[in-house]
Image (cartoon, rainbow, N blue to C red):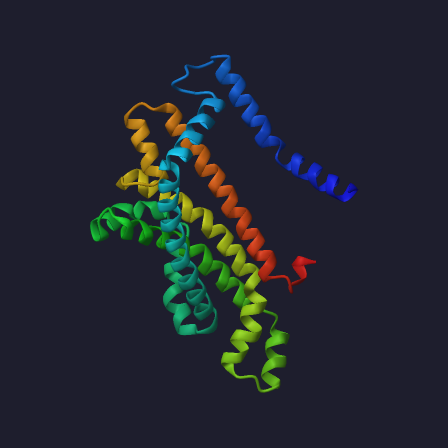
Length: 257
């Protein structure tokens, strides 16, 4: 019982900053430091969020946003891991991709949005492609570094026992690199959500970003802020889910201890 209480106290302390921010938001809005249009109260925003949830508008927009997010993230995850491993394992591939990654990783990917609109239009495929393009670089870099930093003694020991190159990759290299690979995936997932919201705001269509832009055009301030709150909640849930998946899949690793 004492252990449970201790866990709840730790969770409460970790969320104290969010609670204080919510209280300050509600208090500031009720004191009318600014107009209700510029800063609606948190209670009115939560009421609007609940109304959208009951009407189904929030679920539809959230569903479309998450589908685009996970579609682009999945493409980036698969491509990033494959490219990262091949860069670390093959010199010719490294020679080709090293300049591309060095230039593309620090570059703001959203600057390519007009090009993606010209190439793919303003529908779902362009948004998914933009997400995949924006999210692939953290996965590539993390996988590349993780694969190169695998303990050489493990590799030499496996090779001395006659392990094939394929078995070496699947049984030694990838399991050893998985913690850093998951770090890259944990970075890429929030990026995917951010890029989807930006694409929906820019290109239009349904989704959380599109709903916020529609509310803005009709001067619906609570609708805009409810979209921000929904995005914050969804983002935090996705981050927590990735942490849970990491712990479950890496239960054998020393970091789980």
